[in-house]
Length: 534
Image (cartoon, rainbow, N blue to C red):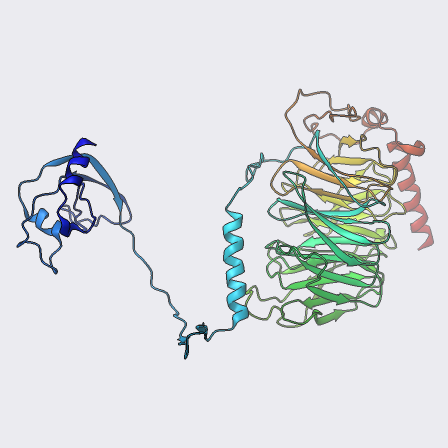
C-alpha cells in the first residue's frame, strides 16, 4: 500500500487518472502447439516498466513496449485468465432510425414476439434465483410422507381438487367459497398465497399446469374451462375461455406443447383447443365423439404421442396425437385418430374416476368407482394388480402414483387416504389424522420431494401437506398414526393373498363396518351377478 500511495503521488499528468499496478501476457498458441482457450490459465504478473514519452505513440500500446523489454521484475501475485469464443448472432434485426427527436427507434419485428421473448428471458432468470433445496434426488425412490408439513386455507366449503406445478414450487387448489369458486395458488415451501383466480360460477372438478408452468387450466361445472396466466398479478382476468355446452369434468395440457388443451365432460365429447392467439376464446380444433358416457379422465404418455381417456361406462380408449412441439408454430397438425380400445369387458358399466400412467410407460393405473383400483398392463391388456381397501361407490375421487412408481395413493369415502405398494398390492399406510368430515376427493404427490397433499370439500376443511422425515422404523401393520406424526415403515415383502394375510389385514377396520375380507367377498358376488345378467 505504501508503494501504491507513492506511485499515485508521482503520477505524471498525461496518465489521465490511470494507475498501472501490474501486467501479464498470454500466448494463445503455447510452446507445445496447443491452444490456451476454453481453459483456466495462470499468468505471472510483472511490475510496469518506465517508458519514455518518445516510445509511447497513439498506435502502440504501452504494455507492448513492456513486453519487448527483456528486464522484467516479477510482481508478487498471479492472475487466472480464461479465453472463450463469442458466437455472432445469426439474425440481426434491422431497425428504423428516428426522423425527429421525440420518435422512438423500433425494430421491424412484431412487438408481440419481442414481448414473449422478453418474458421468457425474465422467467428463466427468475427460475435460477432462490432455487429450493428438495430432499429427494433425481431417480431416488419416493417415500411415504409421515409428518405434517403445513396446512393451507381453502374456501368456506373446502377444496375439491389440487395439483402441484411441474417445478414443484406451487400448488393450485380448486376451492368452493360462499358465493364464488376461486383457484388459490400457494408457494409450497412457505405456504404463502401468491395468486387467487376468480371467474368460475360452478364447482371446479380439475386443475392442470402447462409444461412450462406458465399457464393453469381449470375445468368447472359452469360449462367452461378457463386458462389463467400464472405470472400475472391481476388474477381476475382470464387468459382464455373455453366454452362447453355442459359440465366439464377433466382437462389437460399436452405434455410437449403448452398451447394445446384437451377437455372432456358430460356431453361425451373430447375437445381439442389451441390457446395461442390474441382472441379471448380458445380456437376449437377438433371434437371426438367415440365415448358412450361422460368423460371423467384424460392423460398423456411421456412423449405426448398417445392420449388415454376414460368415461362413466368403463370405456377406456387410446388416441394418436398429432402435435407440433414448436411453440412458435401452429400446435395442431391434423385430426387425432383412435388407436385402440383397451376397455376390459368385466368392468363394463363401472365409471372410471381417474387415469395415471406409470413412470415406465407400460402400465396404467385405472381408478374404477367400485372401491378397487387396478393396474393394467398396456402390452397384454390385462389387470396385473388390484388395490383394495379404499371405499368408493358414489363420489368422483382421485388417485395418483408416486413419481418413481413405487406407491399408489387414493382418497376414500370414509374420509381417509390409503397407500399401497405398487408391485405387491399390499396396503401399507393409512392417513387418518386429517379430521375430514367428507370424502378425500383430491390428492397429488410432489414431483421433486417426498411431499403429498390432500383436500376435501367439507365445510372449512384445510388442504394438508405431509412430508417424509426419517423416523424410527416400526412394524408394518401399524397404519393408524397419532394426531401429529404418521407412523411409517418399510414396504413389506411380496406375499400372496392367503387366509393368514387376510387375518393380518383384517385389523384395518373402516367406517360402517367395511373390512377387507368383506370387500373381496362382495367383489366375487358382483362378478357372478354380472356374468349371469350377460
